[in-house]
Length: 319
Length: 297
Image (cartoon, rainbow over all chains, first blue to last red; front, side, top):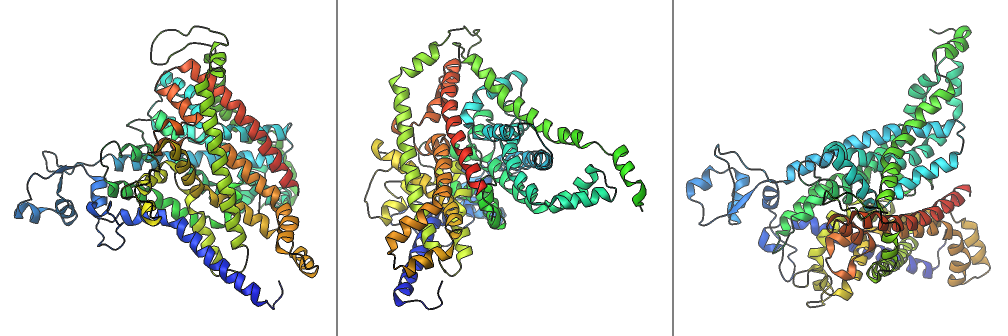
């Protein structure tokens, strides 16, 4: 671009900057609304006009993690004084936290769903990236008969609609007792992510010069040693990026989890919508559950920003 | 220390041969995918010729092509396909316009460009089911922020059967325009600058420059985005399922889900799954051809 800009170009650039700002605000507004609703007292979540300025409260998060019941009468001064500080925000909202006979706080369904999501997403990511890295190396370095067909086959398994695969898997899982188990979902997510991880890792492997390993082989390394000591460290960034992509996919997955789990192994995505139910949902609790759920993904997106293009195009477009 | 002299013998005698390493690395993945992706499909192909219902213990009876024949003659199923087609067209078209437009805006010297791009990409990384659900509050006719901002009064987004499909598509456009933007940006930044300089010297107008230089060079990558989003929109389930219960938003995946897991017509749903599967594989094939074409450039 020429160093000297005409006044017309400068004006155009200013218009573009304003337009970009407007687009960015529109795109981020729903996310901002989730975050702000998750710190609102319940009565401010559904007001006309919408409440923008308010005093933040952690009451939605306390409600998210615990079972509550409506208060018939206001709490006595002793009850109020005896309650921990985080419990008072629930008193203020006209509810109290349910406790068992020993006075232990009764947890809601959310913490266990969140934990299930973590266990299933992390385990399936490790498996998919682990197997995918080996396979990608195999495709990248050795001659494989019918390589293009095999790679197409691998990719096509990823493209299958979840519900299509879920029907026979449901019947098979029921037959072997894998319905509503962590292992069942881990297997499904591993299979789903494996194809993706092979494609993405193959791109990263192709970029590591063959000469590195060949030099190591000459130095007396076996092929295995060369792979573990030379190739893997070189591929570390690619492995990390692939792992984050697989984690996000498994973390966000809805259809399989909806069909294959109902209690024990249920993850957060089918659980959160089931809380809306009928009647008037408490949107502050839904917002806080959503906010906690999307927080790890938002952090990962920032860490991953330079690899997003590659990941989203299955490694086809590199920059 | 390893002396160079015995290296070759050591590598040959103690290490696995390249062929066994190749097989060791590749075969487990292929086997895993066959067992957990292909075998279930063969299993359901068998059931698609039966009247099996997973909710009863009655044995499956072979009914031949009856399921397929009935499905293909069922106007309701065709209606589901028509809804899906409409949804695909609205949402993909919207994503291309918004995504490509935003990429055109971003493809110049803009302060904090990297940060803005990353922020814009956030929606597509989030869970469709969980974040999509929150749009129910945004669309609410009484206290939804959207009606308030646009001053629409009590406009029914999800409550009106005609509007509901568009409402779901708008949320989809919000989530996935960033994807089209990301790929378009890659395409735009790869257009050689000297072409624009040459066009400027020739006093080419902005329309000429756009249609004769920018668009043709970005087209292949844009095409990838379009095919990929078409495939995903065709399969869509999460968003429409959590947002709306209207029959007018019953895309084919939702029909399939209901047939299989609410009406328990297992055999029939397996047949429908196969019809959907063949369509998806056809789109996948086109997609992979395009991927390879772009890779070769």
